[in-house]
Image (tube, rainbow, N blue to C red; front, side):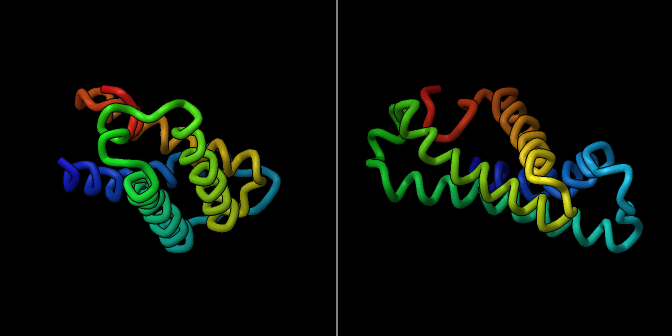
Length: 131
């Protein structure tokens, strides 16, 4: 199961990064195109997938296995998500020269798609939540 989730996160990252950039970029600034856009999309998408791994690793290191499997509290989930959201927004900001708010929404798009796919697979919205 974990390999399917990791593979999906890695494959979807660059595609969603590319798609998100197409409508979140500043129309007044020059747009990235061609190979430059492809490299930026792949880099940003891989960082997004890596952040899911960081979320899982930090969550399993900080919280007991019983708590993780039974479901963490909302405060604990937020403690894991807030830094992840900040790092994801920073990745979009650095990769695509988006303003911080657009970078946040760019990363949020990726999260919404991957969380939605987790739901379709019958998994909890976030790892560590009650199923």
